[in-house]
Length: 279
Image 1: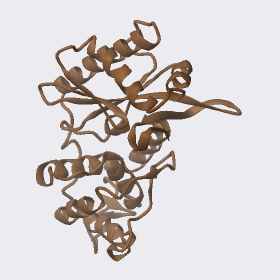
Image 2: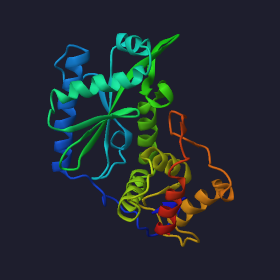
Image 3: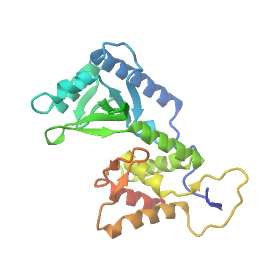
Image 4: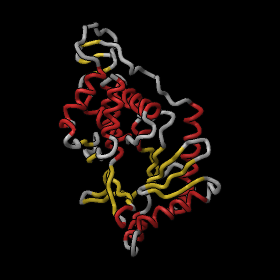
């Protein structure tokens, strides 16, 4: 691993948290069945691929075997108009409608609405979070921004741009020779094995590492070894400490690509625990 010509060893290594093919096959099968169920209910279509994309950690390439599977499914604009005009919490009713559509396919599975998503929990421990969403139309037409429901505080709508985030992560991962993805996966692994009772969101992990890693990258062919004063893990922790404002404030973190703010009020202290453990 190197930073601008400096080569060191690290606990972050290539391929250490790869999702096995069997698990990927199961994810794909369930993804297609859920997509088809929602398309049948809202689009009158039997397609198991249309209107649906992987988002979250799996979509950004930073998931591990224990990660939740986040799926965004676009619904027709007419459904946004219908649910947003309902008296009371239309966002909650939207989640219930999506839940009922999936129950037709998985009648014996634990499915429930939870804040912003419909959670599908399988008995083998695999968990899908389905985000119903609507494309945002502006003066120039549709862009890659989506509007999705939030049932809290009586119900409101929030926005996300997962494709911009995925593209930014993919580009930086390439420039770091795979180090970005592997670091995010390693942090997830430590959180899951050492701090499993604490909450630390995937988007907070990915956004922090994206910003904190600077010019570090896995060593490329032909790069020479140069002694280093500080390890990669120490550099990440130093960045964390620098922006923590001595513990007085919650730092402002933005998502790569989209520039949307990331909630760091929950999980920031846990991230510090993980980074200290890595060092």
